[in-house]
Amino acid sequence: MGSNIKKPDRKPFYVYLVIVIIAMLLINMLLLPLFTSRQYQEVDYGTFLDMVDEKAISTVEVKNDYIYFESKQGVYYRVVAMDDANLVSELHEAGCRFSQVDTSSSPLETVFFGWILPLLIFYGLGVLISRAMLRRMGGGSGIGGNPMMSFGKSNAKVYVPSTTSIKFSDVAGEEEAKQLLQELVDYLKNPKKYADIGAQCPKGALLVGPPGTGKTLLAKAVAGEANVPFFSIAGSEFVEMFVGMGASKVRDLFEQAEKNAPCIVFIDEIDTIGKKRDGANAIGGNDEREQTLNQLLTEMDGFDGSKGVIILAATNRPEVLDPALLRPGRFDRRIPVELPDLQGRIDILKVHARKVKIADNIDFAAIAKMAAGASGAELANIVNEAALRAVREGRRFVIQQDLQESIEVVIAGYQKKSRVLSTKEKLIVSYHEIGHAMVAAYQSNSAPVQKITIIPRTSGALGYTLQVEEDEKFLLSKEELLNKIATLTGGRCAEELIFNSITTGASNDIEQATKIARAMITQYGMDDQFGMVQLSTQNNIYLGGDTTNACAPETAKTIDDIVVKVVQAQHDKAKKILSEHKDKLHELAKFLYEHETITGEEFMKVLNSPTDPQFQTEN
Ligand code: ADP
Ligand code: MG
Ligand code: ZN
Image (cartoon, rainbow, N blue to C red):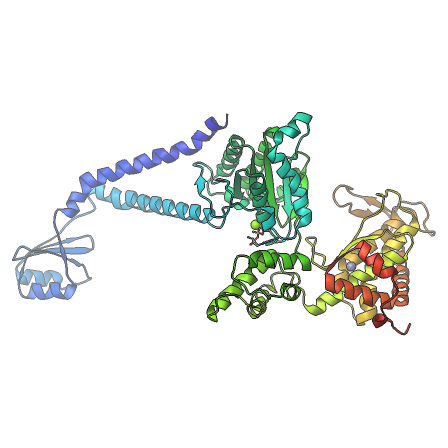
């Protein structure tokens, strides 16, 4: 089916090629003899004038921008013509025959210079550019330098699996992601086991995380573990100069994948084609991208899931993706690939240290601590930079000093781009997150804390306190909502208490706290003054649930006042809790600062143990 749709795309291209070749042959037969029959010797204008003066020239012809002349010895010369008003009289004086050749009457030449030559040049350039692009796409990927075969029509490449391929063990940390991907590996290894029982394996999974965290590496590792071919293409490669090429590339890709099943199809930077489709950019909008996306959706729906083709995609901007891509049967699995925590960074450094000659007394933990917030790619770069430094210093292996120095080079370079935390920031974020967690823990109704981390998350928040309810709750009491607000203010409270100054880190907390407080009054009828009256309407509960006021302007003002009062009261409550347990706040913040990520259990253990005397404060 697919193949007879494809041909029209390519045919004109070959026809064009044949025409160009015929044109070249014609030129060779008809025109070139005119130019090549005589060998002209190039001279400069001065020499030409001297020869004229010496009367050494027999004939002169002016043609186009050149003066062709023959010496009395019978040698042919050529010189670039100049704007010389005296030339005619001088030539006359010298007694040579001279004439101007009319070139405008030679249609073949006009056609050649005006039409065929430019075409040839453009064609040549086109070929060169596309070759260079192909080479660039091929570079930088490939499993362990395996032989790579480029499959004619599309740029998707198949990597022949070999024993040197990338395995999960090459990806340090990211245990959560690996665990989620393990199921896919198992499926690829024996699709039959799943087919027999009638289980549908997910068709696609989306790797989501900041740049350099190992998304591409993980996708390759899935292929390596399952020992299946790995087709990869970047989203940007679909969007081509020629309309319709993107869509046909998608078709090719899936056709090849189905032939080679079981296999992995990996679409990197899927956000470049998978952006939300909207009417807004219809003016000069990217029809091509939209067509490509539609084709991708069609192919994903169309192919037979039981054949063992798994589509992985990676993005660092999941929020811009078209919701259609995330529907069941498409990329319905989302695999977070987060920045590594301290242990993760140590492991990544060790993985990369295996590739260089390194002293055996290296303190990786010290290096990892200095690089809080660095991504896997940055850590890999640090090791490489250290190796380069070792070479510069004339050493045969890397020492601690090299790593320490290179960390500064690499991190300083990245500091503005990525979210590497300074020591001070790390400390503030530690107190902030512990503030949230403690307020939650001391309020009987709040859910226990599951995991606290100061590593920046994909969501953009610096730290993140995961609060997973014991049972998923659909009904929340007024009490619970108020406690939630208190918990949200806890982060800022801790900053106030310890640093006596506040930071911008709480903006998301403030937004959420305000939302809850407002909803309590306008949606849930939880305010005594208004009672059970709906004061706002929800626009679309599926799209973030924005609300609009449905009340008189004066009422809106009263609501604002109550919201302020509610949040203020909870803020005070949180502050009271934290100042009563300041010693625990110090102890836990230090604990988090050192570990970067702690579990809820660890948190509760420290919280419930007698306070370490070093943290005991006056109150
Ligand atoms: P992404 O696709 O998420 O931007 P990549 O997978 O391209 O990141 O990672 C770039 C490089 O960084 C990898 O080739 C690898 O050398 C290194 N790297 C990133 N994360 C890890 C990790 N978890 N373990 C080991 N190396 C990593
Ligand atoms: Mg990548
Ligand atoms: Zn917060």
